[in-house]
Length: 394
Image (tube, rainbow, N blue to C red; front, top):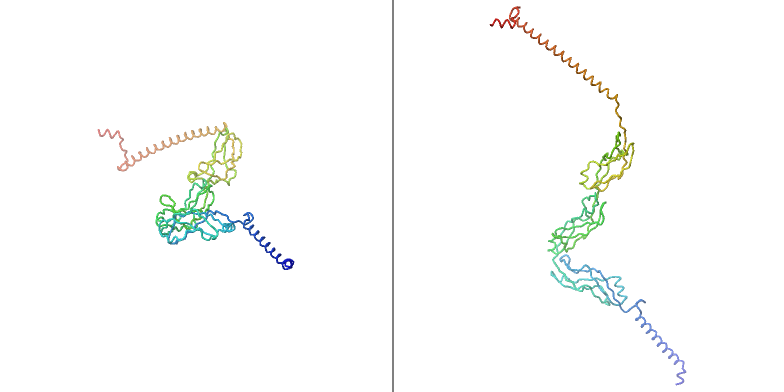
């Protein structure tokens, strides 16, 4: 026995056995540490994670059926090995699905959602756990889009031209009974600020019934881009200067614009206010002004107007002193009176002379008639006068 203990082979065998034991122990310790490592060090036994706002995939023949009742999104809580949970959360390489709805057919059904594409090492819970849906026969129609725009969104004095759309019509699909209820399809344009320039905005399209209730349908495209040209409602007006105030005694005033080229104003406002104006009145106060002067005047806005350009204008006030009449200026008037009187007398004399001449002419004519009558009787004797004729008759 002693020889065996002292044998070199025995020593080698014992050393090998201790080496095997030591290797087994070390390997066991390493595996134990690997399984119990804290998650902060990169590995853990298990964990869980909630993922929200996931779309729902509907497994149905969409050319034949229309389904209503689905929520917009669903949530899922997954649990399992941390590394798999982390990888799944990052990639989201799975779907929440409503399976095999074609087999259910038309009607109301309560179904459960399932997760497709998850690792078999994971467990999951979907919220909501079940939903009630309605499957209907599908109908597809094309509708014209109506733009709804509140002109109150325009700044005062601005008008919008007819809007244009990138899509004038949309295709609407839904249950046959719902399509029948569609009254209008609208793209509603709104703005939080006053609009003063050309406008372009992408807005959703919605379908409404006759009572203004929004209908549950699928619209393609579901958004349209609305473009509108916005222009200022302006009008050129000449400036009309009006003198006011108390003028200085013995002075005349002439009002004018210093820059004679700038006589037209560009006025913006409501159509009603602009229609009432053929010129733009501006009152100029001449109180206390006794010499030619210029001054810059602010142009006030009349009710119904939103802007005016230019906002200021330079006015020229020309002052002229009146000339007073002297006593010598009154004499020509007296002379004129004398001349008028002389002309009147002369006219009277001429009229009297003409009247006398006319009387003499008439006497000559009468005498001539008597002579001519005598010749007709065939003798040169004088005709009896009127007194002799009267005596003979007696």
